[in-house]
Length: 192
Length: 302
Image 1: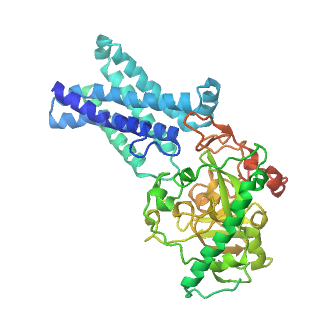
Image 2: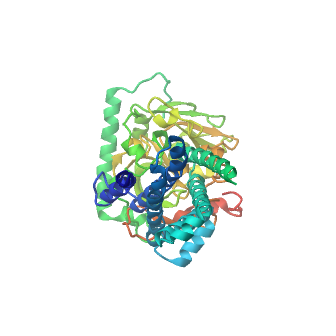
Image 3: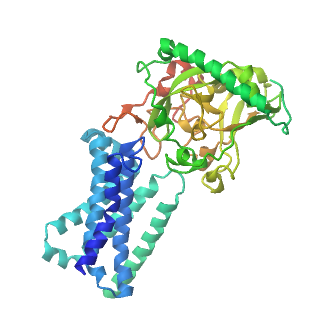
């Protein structure tokens, strides 16, 4: 079991490994606008990983496989890892680390407010799980998963909102997110 | 220019001539460029313009007819056949209607070098050493009548050669337009090459518009139709989202896109840690074009 968890976690890190190689000029490099490539790729892989994380529970529920209990946490952390690089490369490199500039940029760019909110949600959950506040974590499972869901909805919204024309992936992720939220409401109603 | 019937196909000799003509023009220009006056003449506001490397210009393109990603157009198969190439002149404002061969145009007009800033609506920019024919020179020969208030341009519509046109990304064919005064401004260019070489597919081969004081989407690529018309043309991005992409689309750091700021831009090729730079009013061509918009509310007519 633990072995499978490690394998899946490693798989989720492959895009990061490829991106690192691109940074050193392999696989045709990062292109003409390297900072944009890093921001876009880490953002995309962050939200993809997060949605896969959320999909594990319903899929595991129907497949009755034990893996679904162990996998969400490491995958959620990998997602946070991507989003952390996404945010830091935006703040420190793209915006030059100037807090005033970043604040003005976030105010002027509505999809950044949404992205920022989603990032804070994910970060808060990540910090709790990293600090191993296990008792609190276990007592508040529904709150935690609620925050993760909120982060995912905000993340997909942030992605969708900045596209210039209708693109396949953000639409697909939005539909998945809608289905997941529906499933979440259905199951949480049953419990209460 | 002599109108030719649509059925006419450029002979091989005409095609060879076209190369020769460009070649001769280019070596003359290269000689001038070595002496510097061309580059110096094109500098203003921010000093001397350093052209973006050729490889960068040719690998970072927005050309949805060839795909969404910036690298798609350069990685796409070179399926668009650009020679022979003809342009149809139509519309109520056109007295000399007809189909004109691009090869003939090379003999008719002098090819100029224009080093210009290029600012995309997505807040990135480049400096591009274009070669081409000022649109005003072409329009003067075409002698449009008083009904010609606007000039509309169409990108070639060939779904079999342009994969993006098989998807409903935008309303195809791509259409852009200028007012007559904008079209006649000396900055407005019909570009046929950059860095002294023919345009590649991803940059809008074989002929495209360059309107350096407007956002890049106005600079329509691979043109094969020009309409002279009285009413304001409906343009592609304006049809797609009229609240985001106006007809004028003048570069203006004070008027933001509804979803992002236009006050700064990333100059492509300035290095990984290169800072963003302030965007200039009319992309730095205020002296040349501000008079066109005197008294206009640029927030309303964005």
